Length: 448
Image (cartoon, rainbow, N blue to C red):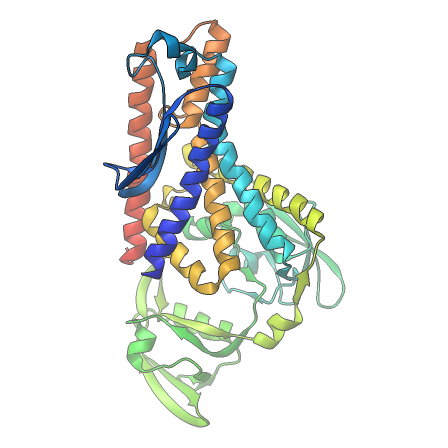
């Protein structure tokens, strides 16, 4: 129920603000607005205020503002000056662009509220390096302090993650990371995307080449429901002592044993409540690029003392928080655009697309965590809506802007046939993207 309500609130707020952007600028330009609708379908609730009917409809996947327009209805000569289609091209462009711009401004507001109250951040210190990952190949070591990524300075882990995503967009160029080692020496670690298989590339594109700020204890922190580890009887908090009679010095050593043992029975000695126990399990065999590896569905126990030691709270002034919010909105929007461009030319997988099921799931998760995570989620989705609607795809706001730019160049509007053809192409493209996103959602939901 919380997930459903969090999703409805998110869509309601973001769509209302988007459509209100269109509405406000339309009224400012003297255009008559006939209906302001949140949702699609027959209205559940509606009321009249001035010239506009306000409605709430049952399908919560969007909304619309219906304006007086000679292309859709007969318009009385006395009201013709209030019709959308009779406005100058610059007014029409302003009305259409106002929706996406409203979403971007809303994102700035949400980020501003989050940043102004102080943000918990992590120093850019490497806590762990996953074995057999690009970071491990590049020579990263626990204790490395990240200083620059492709000459871009980083002050915390969030900046480092964004810089890595930015660097990933320049594939196949290697990524040069300047670090200060735990011993105080300056070194350069080089991450080479040309050496990665598809699995590692997808992780790298999300800013994860195999390094983490977290340090892990040699113990079980969490279990996948129905996974090999859970079925074998392992429990959260179990400390790993040995496997097949050989001592386990670290969680990384345990991961290596599991990965190298697909389908092979292992005898694991653990410590639980001060007592030593033996557990037998057989790692599942799963694909990882071109090879098969073992997997048991267990996560490590995070070293909370280490995490506390590298944490700090960033407390900007209210004005500085606003500037940081605007910068964060711009960075997120720019990164989203570049990532969409990479998907278009085949450099990024369509598996990264998310649809309404994933959005609803994340809405519920962040709502459970508290108001601040939920506001950050709303900001991110608001940026996504703004960016998506600015894409030059007919049926989206960006597609209409593309038509108006063509009108400025030609000196007259495009023919109705050309616009109709574009609308059909745009609908097919948008429907395809939505289908891919829904299939990805279902795959994540059912573990496909």
